Length: 259
Image (tube, rainbow, N blue to C red; front, side):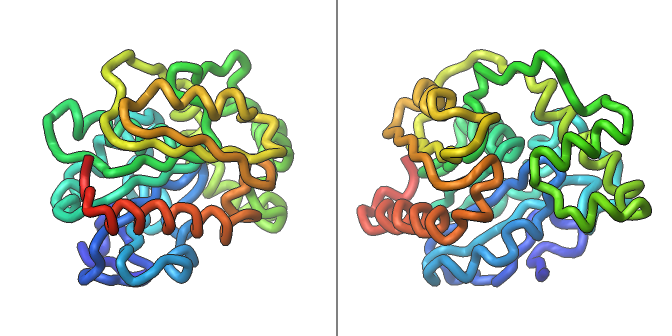
């Protein structure tokens, strides 16, 4: 995967396109890396440059210390991303990534800086409803791996590789802790448009909790359910990317840029 900002950059470009009219920043789920979105650029027209976020301590940044707090994860990549927000842009985040991207948009708004013209959140309950009664990030290894199997977001060949799991478990635990201990701090709704996606078979995030993202924006809102479980971003990838691209191009064609 190539980068325009050096080996230590938080931003990776599967298909660099600096002439694009807008940028789409994609924030991975817990345990995911920037590589999650490596094929997405093939689904977007040339007007959109895909920018995939690599969190600290993950992927090519393994030598760096892990962070296990959503706001800290966001703050760590803020300085790298902020100079790239010099053209219309949107955020997409799945599961934990939805919370990271939401907190990023909140910080921009709080600091009086131009925000995304749209926030796309996926596979996540709304921030104010984020409460985990029985956290799993601190389970013994065997139980934690069993939970990962149940969620079906980690390939079986990875879960069955003891050496690889020894490397991966601290990373996945840190991300699960960040997501499961996230504490919403009340504040003004976002000014940008917000579109929330959910999986029709997702038992973790039912439709009614996807709908409650509505109260976190003063802009337009739409919730949409797609085929699949919690990781519908894989099984319904062609549909999901098409919907995001259509929405983004519509904003550009209308000349809205940023809201």
